[in-house]
Structure formats: C-alpha cells, structure tokens
Length: 300
Image (tube, rainbow, N blue to C red; front, side, top):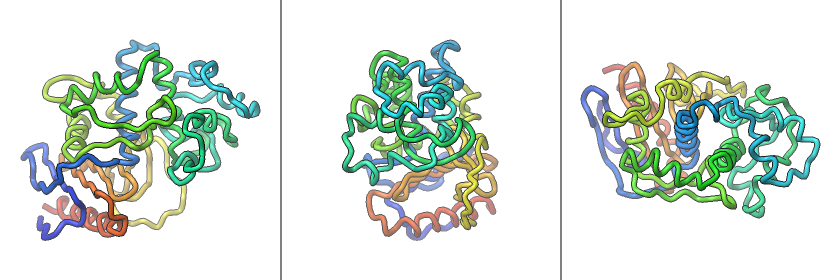
C-alpha cells in the first residue's frame, strides 16, 4: 500500500494481526459529527446489558418521555406510543422529513427541541420507512437519560469513555440532553479505541464493555436505504444497522459530515480512522482516497 500524500488531517490504518500499519495524526479533538450516533448506540447496548432486561431495544419510548415533555401535536400520540428504542436506532420512527440537522435548527430554541421532535408530524408507522436524520438519536439520548434518572453523560463516561482511556470528552447538549446524533468531540486516537470494541466483539484490553450480541447488531444490515444513489464506491450508504452503514462489498463504517470516517474491513481484520479538521472542500478527495486505500488493502 502506497500513500504519498493523505488528503485528511488524520489517518490511522490498524490491523488486528499486525497493529498500526499507517499513522499520521493531529493531536486534536474535533466534532466527529454523525459518528456520534455509533457512540450513542454503544452506550445504549451497555445500558441494555446493565438493566438486566428492563431496558431493551423493544422498550417503548413514550412510556418514559410522556410526563417529561409537552407534545403539542396530539395527532402524533398514537404513533409515538408504538415507537421503540430500535426505531430510534434505525431511523424508522416514522418521519417523512429530515429534521434536527444543524442547518435546520439554527433559529430554534435548543431547550425545546425534544418537544419539537416529538410533535413534528409522523407520517408512517414505526418501522415502516427508513429516513436518516438526527432526530432518532436525540430522542434516544433523552429516553436513556430519563430512564436512568441521572445525567446520561456521566453514565457514558463511567461505563465507556473511562474504561477505554478516553479522557472526559466534550459532548454538546440540546437543552438538558446530549445531542446524541452529533457534536461529540474526539481525536483520531479516541476513535481508534472505540473501533477496537467492534473489532474485539465488545472487549477492550480483556474487559467486556458491551455484549458481542450488541456489536453484531450495530453492524447488521437491518434497513436498506432505498434512495437511488449512484455511489459506486466502497463507502456507499446501502444498509443501516444500529449506528453503522454497510456499503459495497460489505465495508462497514460510520461517517460524519466533513470527512470523518471509522471504517471496518471485517474479512481483512483492518480498521481505518480518518478525520478532517475543517476544510469542507477536501471531502470528495478524502472519500476518493479512502476508497482507493480500501481497494489496495483488499488486494494485498
């Protein structure tokens, strides 16, 4: 594999058998954007493990949130009563419109975004339609915190970040809840540690952090993205699991707007971490280079 000049600001290529194959990084924590969904999903799996069956992927969110927020759109309630944790994880709550993306909420009161999300029209029954947005993971963040009865950040820090050596990362909030879907600030090395949980079936340095069953669901092909994309790269958005995409040739990955990637080549036992610190013009070049790296690694 020949990498003369990397397009991204940080690139780590890791092999389960051989360790670090390539490393060029900036020691900087950046907004990993939608890779945060993958982290929220890991935290959800940990909560499920620790609840001993009381909180599961089939838990109904309405029962937990109904007394915590004013739902102004009463027409939504019949559908809200049937939304489960797994619908938040898989972007199948029932929305027809993409909501809670950064550009959509600039002028909205962040303290009322949970009410906004739960009152926004639900056109489909839960599980019927896949529509990728930030809404599900923010609602999931609120649901997990209200179920716990204390700050979700403290739970994640104690049971995930601290256990794998990520020191007190910053995670923005909308009102009193973690954004869940984005605005988590991590370094490339932090992402490498999180990725090792996937590669090692939920175990980090000999300690089980999250169940192997949950790791399998995170990367499973649970919902097909039916949009007619012409993306023929390895990083196409073909299927979605509980926080990870699966593209062509079974490349599994999390991605964030702006050129952030956490990529798994399961058959080869290889993980790729890529971070872009801010130049949006580099995003197409980053994706193209990563596609070429994946093809090269699979030929070796």
